[in-house]
Length: 286
Image (cartoon, rainbow, N blue to C red; front, side, top):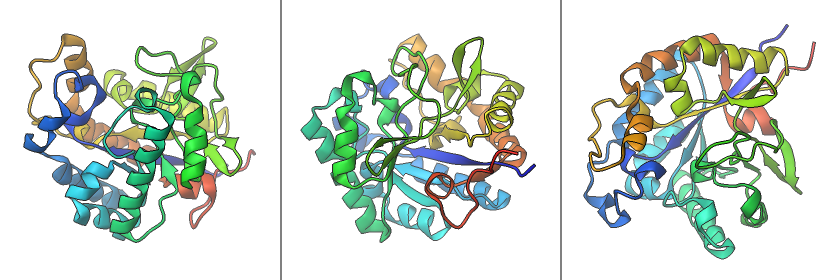
């Protein structure tokens, strides 16, 4: 049975831009914060090169403007450049027009800096849900071909648990590719990375991803952030205990876990896996 290619994705943002710290770090302080994203992405690029993996980098326009050479290195090394919006504002916090302006701005910046077409988008904090499905109309209008913005789980900050678990056409010419869940005890369990990957034993994450590949015969979508491999990042000490727990848990173990994950599964770019491309797409059912 042919191995299924899963999509490996990185949400390119820095530690001070995460939604959990938004109440504690005003946006007008971003420029004065120590930015560590470039060194962390370079470490990720080296890891991917060592494993012979191509991935998708959902990148903030704010980051791209400040580190244009980093954006070009991502593309030059064979990875897909995709959009994470401009300034990490949750889609659910914006009006439809403000959201459209944000995703158009980010797409334009990324394309101008890289010289490649940007086809994919991921909403910050998976913030497309039942209350703002108009976001798909805006993505279609802006010229994106796919989104990976819906998490079909129950969560206190996001989630649409009744939405489809696997890729589906949400508008004409626009695919929604949800991040991956495994079906267990009649519930969707988070299987696609982020804080859950740092919280759960590695064997549990491995089992859920394998279950999606073998039982569902579907490609998984896995994500992580550059700050997750950076245990020495500055601490946001005025944040609440819940935010600190979610953000700092097991950072020191993340890089070694990723090394195992990269070796244990077959990985590729989102566009190659779900839109077709040089790499083989999902394996056909046996």
